[in-house]
Image (cartoon, rainbow, N blue to C red):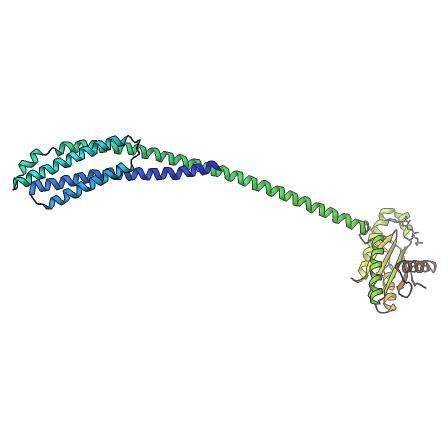
Length: 364
Ligand SMILES: Nc1nc2c(ncn2[C@@H]2O[C@H](COP(=O)(O)OP(=O)(O)OP(=O)(O)O)[C@@H](O)[C@H]2O)c(=O)[nH]1
């Protein structure tokens, strides 16, 4: 990261330095042109005698001096071009002095006398020297410019390389943290699912997935509490299959298990959403009906449940003849608490067994 900042900083710095060199080269060209302009003004005056050319001479001289002072300001103190510039400054001054002198001579001659002044002008010789030295300065500046250009290219390359490496590192970190977070979330969700499953297993029968004996007590206690407070009624059906042992004995426990699952599903099909069905254990089921108005509704429900076994139940292709004996207890009629109600319902179920099975009885 720090490398990237350093490379970027140097990039900006080198670009500024390169611009400065370009400005200096521009001043070198300007200086050369200004001297030529001044020379043209001088020659124009010497050849024609028109004072108009003196303006061009002065302007060229002023521009040349300005370019020299800008270069003096801009060139590095350690630059090898500095001594050359000092030389050029002297030569330019000599040249301008010679120009001024030739103009003075012309003026004092009083009339147009080109042969007089031009012959004495050593300007050409000086101009050659100046041009040579200006070319040397420009050559040095060009080398400097090329160095900055190469340095800029290198820094761009370094910046891009560092940026690519940095991006790779950032992407890797992001991918790694994403994967860790995902794994963590998966772990949490898995734990939650296991906890949910364990909680479900604690309250439900593994075979039929119906609520188990523990749930029956919890459900009955809360139903009883609500009925007591709201002065409502509810009924408990105790149901025990008839002839179930025969199935186990004849076809094995596997078929017995499959029959229990099928019976649970058959019961569920004739019940309403508000009814609560649980497996009490073995071939015993408990049904709690908490929304009914008349006992007749309980009678009709018991008949429907018994009717389910009017035909043999087919399990794994085997027709199995079984039935159900039901005992019914109503709150508050048959008991003032849950234990009492269960006891009355259980006893009523035994009455049904005693009276020939596959029937229902109300508690006494
Ligand atoms: N397959 C299977 N059998 C079970 C399970 N739990 C209990 N049993 C068996 O269910 C039978 C219940 O006995 P009973 O209620 O006397 O059998 P029954 O033939 O219905 O007798 P009655 O109730 O008098 O009609 C016993 O043989 C238990 O071993 C179970 O989860 N699976």
